[in-house]
Image (tube, rainbow, N blue to C red; front, side):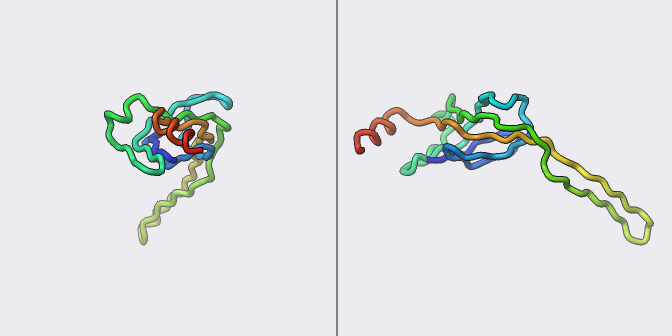
Length: 114
């Protein structure tokens, strides 16, 4: 089972227990955050209709706030003696996926099969 979630203008494929790095969220380590679900797959079917996914959230726990690796931005124009170097380190948040939205009928059907 996995879900496609959206945060920070990007989309991520997550399963339960996954650890992902996303753009900085205003939360402290140990806090729980909810991410919007764009698609949900339970192994047999995929759900993409916005009406069916309305109100469903993926719950993740904030593990850490940190800075990403440095990215060098180099601008250069040949024969003009123009060159500029800048560096950038993006603020990131490390999340661990704790809970995926599970439909109750599918959950009871899988527990009956065991």
